[in-house]
Amino acid sequence: MTGGGGEDVPAARRRPLTVLPLVALIFYDVSGGPFGIEDSVRAGGGALLPLLGFLILPVLWSLPEALITAELASAFPTNAGYVAWVSAAFGPAVAFLVGFSKWASGTLDNALYPVLFLDYLRSSGLALAPPLRSLAVLGLTAALTYLNFRGLHLVGLSALFLTAFSLSPFVALTALAIPKIRPSRWLAVNPKAIDPRGYFNSMFWNLNYWDKASTLAGEVDEPRKTFPKAVFGAVALVVGAYLIPLLAGTGALPSETAAEWTDGFFSEVGQRIGGPWLRVWIQAAAAMSNMGLFEAEMSSDSFQLLGMAEMGMIPAVFARRSRHGTPTYSILCSATGVVVLSFMSFQEIIELLNFLYGLGMLAVFAAFVKLRFKNPDLPRPYRIPLGSVGAAVMCVPPVLLIGTVMCLASATTIVVNIIVLAVGVAMYFGVERLKGSGWVEFLTPVPSDSFHGSSSDDDVEDVRAVLLPAGVPHAQEEEVASKAE
Image (tube, rainbow, N blue to C red; front, side):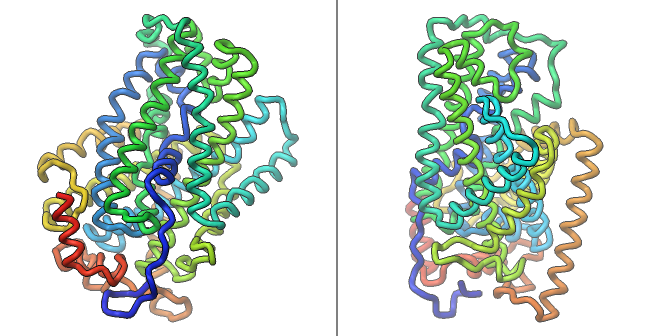
């Protein structure tokens, strides 16, 4: 990739992601199925609060995040994703911190999935002794990392298959549960059993990461058309994948079982409604879903590093692609982080990554609003059908939700996040020193007089000139945007 629009560039690279594989990858970035939502029933003291949560929060949280992702990913269709958006609004220092915090939260998130895969096998009777379990985590991480290395086309097709397989047992579960459903059970709530921290962390974790897919925008075929379609398709798929099994399970089982709804309880729901065969099917689907979650998260995290390298924010080695078109060293970096963090407990990881992710999203919402007000003429092939004031108001509910999750965080979580941010600041200044030393190669960065936070039209165009493929005339781009609007 070149540092500007005036240099010669090689022939256009084939972009492997079309609508359906992208829908599947977004689905796994965000959800992966109803596995993991069980604890919201326990923490909510019954079925009512989680059902309300999965009805209301997708509108207040998921939809605004998905809409912003569709608009800004169509305006900046590059692998830098949200890092480019924040850079255009607030400058490289803030963008680096957002990129680092989101990469860290994504790596934390990914550390869960090899462990959860083995947990589901253990619930099926395939328990491993601690030394063998550690080796299995390493082996599983290596195998899934290799699949990512082999190319996004393969990952996208795998995600499509895994989506179908992961959701298939819940079609059977719902059909078998219908005769046993008592709608009054959906209204059950025990105020004394409500755990606010557990409830909000569970809801937030199960409905976030919509913006992660933006780091794959540079790999999407016709991103300005494909991305909005895929985002809205994924919203419908995620909401349905949560609500339908939850309605079936809580409606068919007595309300007194609310305390039993912990992680992995859907397999027990299958046992009680359909028998051992359905329990095993759900356990197998859950195990495979964790593989899909790992693949989607690894793709997003590694291509984010590639995008940051193309912006000149981190060393050029992270932008090097394999013969399969994948960022080799970015994948290795993300896989190393997964292995290092995989020793942490499930609840520790959830709370830490929620806080880190929330910090990054506050910057993303602020960047979206600033670009709407300061750069209203920025070409946006997809534009949220709201004026600038309406767009700003749309961001209020998700910001309040982030504030709620942060206020409920433990002191340990807050301290750890402060340390992570301090490490990010130190890394930023360390990278800046490296740029001047000449010891490490960096790609042509965005001009230093851009990204200073003023987000003028010229500054944003500097960002786009560096990140967008040269060879697409600006006039043609504006014509596409005009037709879309």
